[in-house]
Length: 126
Image 1 (cartoon, rainbow, N blue to C red):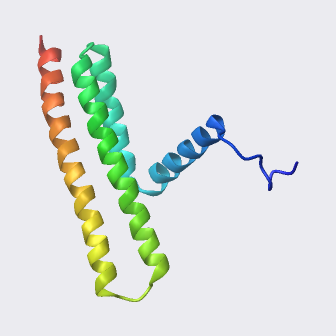
Image 2 (image 1 turned 180 degrees about the horizontal axis):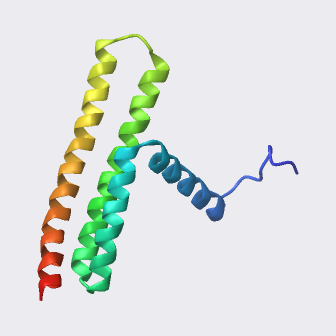
């Protein structure tokens, strides 16, 4: 059977490959996503090294929330630009709402990282 006509059904490895492809594209094409992922990985690594499991979980959840909002925001913006290239007040409002959702998630993520970095900094000093 050709690749064009794949067998129906659930294929977890194919789904995982698609997930990684989308995340890779987001990180490579959007610097604001890339630096947040890198910063989160560094802080996650430190939390893991110091065996701060609650902190690790909190950072992981905050990073997940931020990434989900950023990815949805990027998709909404791309769809809006695709649907209508001219300026349109309705499109502007849609983009602003998506950006507000991403902004709130970034604020939550940044707050978590600041608190956790200060906690890890205290562990490094001792």
